[in-house]
Image 1 (tube, rainbow, N blue to C red):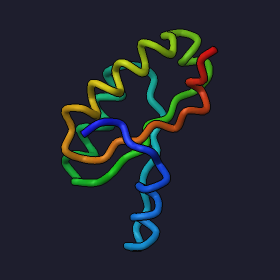
Image 2: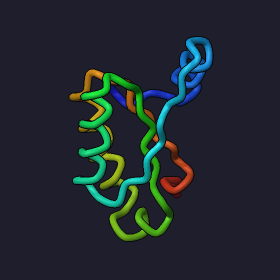
Image 3: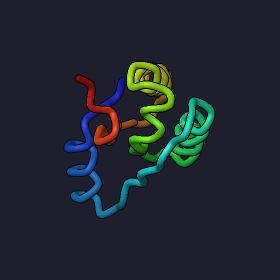
Length: 87
């Protein structure tokens, strides 16, 4: 899969009556751990991060990590972009 929008992910969850976890990441390893846990549970997941983390690693690096992880994952992965605004 690729990164998907939270809107359809959350709409599907609402219709089916389940929640979607959102987890802050600090680095590539924590992002990978969150996605792998979601895969084990066969559950969609929302990745989010803080402005401080974005300032430390840079939005391009974080975006690259998440695109890579989502592309190889069988579960839906969305990104909460508040801390990743570029430009």
